[in-house]
Length: 169
Image (cartoon, rainbow, N blue to C red; front, side, top):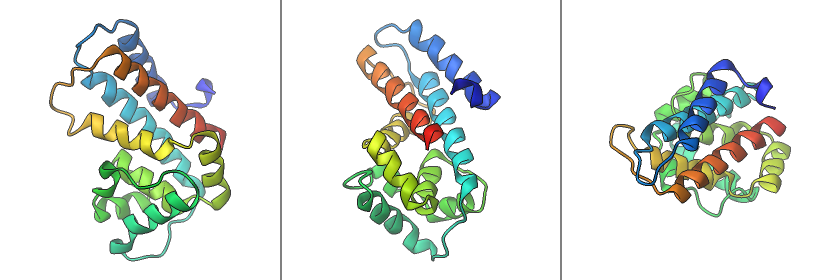
């Protein structure tokens, strides 16, 4: 599956893996989290090419994504990091210009067909929460992020499973 990924995604994942393998307790995880964030966003953006965007008003986008996520068993409630994505950013992502991981996640929830969302939920029921955690960990991307080894391992595992779920549906 790794060979089917684009060059940028591969480079980000290789870099993240190198950081992970040399990790020491309390190291700054910001570059590691940025690489995972970028790789997941790239794979999500590519996934969006399969569907047309929904026809709905901007103020309905987040709520509609929430409804679809809960309907298909992807989460019980959208994580705060997804609830706060600006509708204008989601709209630009729906129009083909991926703006952020959060916007790509909302767009996937809005655009993906029922079978795809059910398939993701069946293989990775924590999919939406995992994306939300990755977004929250990255923050605004400019402050040190000291993490314990266990947290780094969890982010790595979750990110790889998100990518795997997207590739396999």
